[in-house]
Image (cartoon, rainbow, N blue to C red; front, side):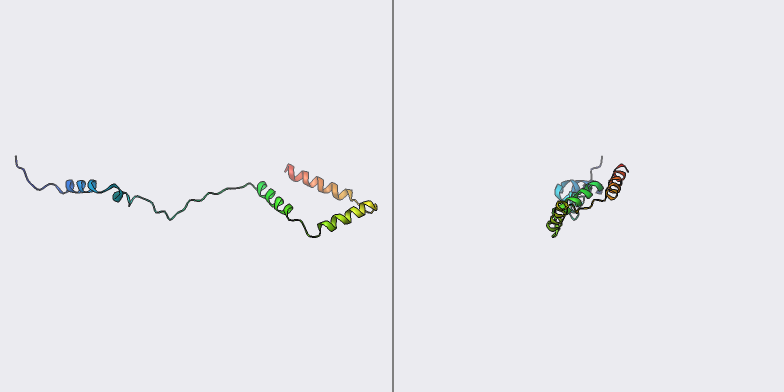
Length: 100
């Protein structure tokens, strides 16, 4: 049996890789932190419509008080004209939209 001081090269490479600290070995496998994760939410169209309506209701027109006062005065003087056909058409339109 012959004993030699020369060890095969692959053994030396394996030993060298194992002796490096774990932090150094894992640097290449880590992903960069350039991409930041963000949360997102998808709202239904009805929810978006409700948000628009809510926002519109929060902002009252500047002449709203005058408009209401004029209608009150017309009602008191029996001058307020109600177009029943127009109201019925709007009601039917709303029902048709809701039922699809």
